Figure 1 (cartoon, helix red, strand yellow):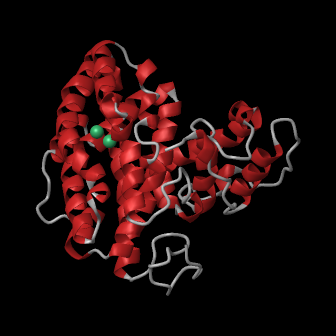
Figure 2 (cartoon, protein in one colour):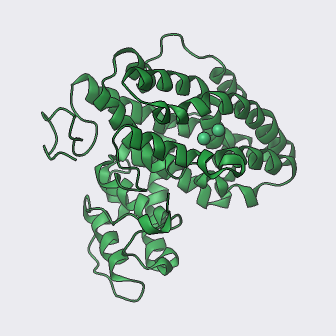
Figure 3 (cartoon, protein in one colour):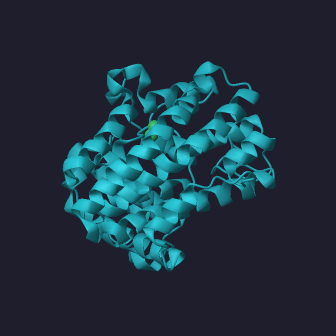
Length: 345
Ligand SMILES: [Fe+2]
Ligand SMILES: [Fe+2]
């Protein structure tokens, strides 16, 4: 699959902040931009406008957009807009979390996998429909089509044993030398198997704020060296919780008619993340705490924050599916039409 040739287009704005940013990005680095958006603090940090604006800012550090000059990545006006947005987002995450449990308590709790859980993977396994599985992949696609990239920012920020262990996991995520095994490629192949468009960023216009927040959190942690402890916590949350959920999703997708390419991504994660879990616990977190014990609270914060944004996305998905309506901003062609714009994709 090509990469540079399939850059996404800028999505439609969702309010004044994302509108201001879309104008700025489209205009290029040297064009003055209109003022007028309300200060970022006046907006809902979890809302569509703020989350899309943040997503646009962060995407400039990954692949960018078709019509946006790559130099815009370091346009001071973009950075100036971004700063209060990410501060507002961080504050909202801290407010929602309240007192964060200790790192040990959180790691211990993650060892226990509920027999009767309630998340989207349980829903899809027990009573999921094909359109819901397709929505699930769309909701996840912004992250999984750049899987491991946000955590790669951690590499130059760790040292010694913690760095070696993190890179060992990242090496697997990037296919261990085999392009057809790169996890983002496996995800793209799965999307195609489920009749979805696997182009990078293709579904950004349909992706609601709760799913954007999941990706924005890791980009935020990744792009701030000061938050490297939180990034390691987020990384650990993904690696530790992935294996049993992946098993359920692979089985669910198989039951909903997916072919072998449609389950390979999750099958891979059943095996790989059982190993990664151990490496991240002892190799990454253990070694990092030996080097920098002061980061313990940040790692705990990252773990809790990752669980928070995942829970918010799960609540959104289940609330929509239980009401038999699409969880996307506009339904895919096989989803119920009752709520949403009614435009099929
Ligand atoms: Fe992976
Ligand atoms: Fe992994």
